[in-house]
Image 1 (cartoon, rainbow, N blue to C red):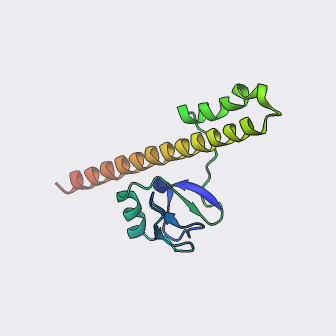
Image 2: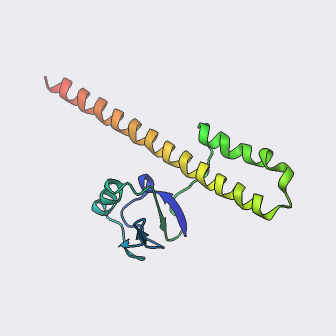
Length: 130
């Protein structure tokens, strides 16, 4: 089971937990297989994260984004609280949040790069026909 940003969702992934509204009403049931249409609907509903089965997305913060740097710095910031269970949980929440933000940022940058490459290829193709 993995919590991922909706931006990283892909067709074929299955929900491990239902998607609910703030009032608790179930919008999408557990076990539902995602399609392009469902992903677009989630984005239009401003759903930020979903929980999917397995670990389909590498959320490793191995890039140099500001979110990754914040995640890496948590060990240092929480070094005085190694035996405090509550602070350990707080650190875990921050780490998960920063890692999700870093993964979403990385996905956005990749999508922009691909769009630019596609636009450049189309421009070259159209330039060759003129």
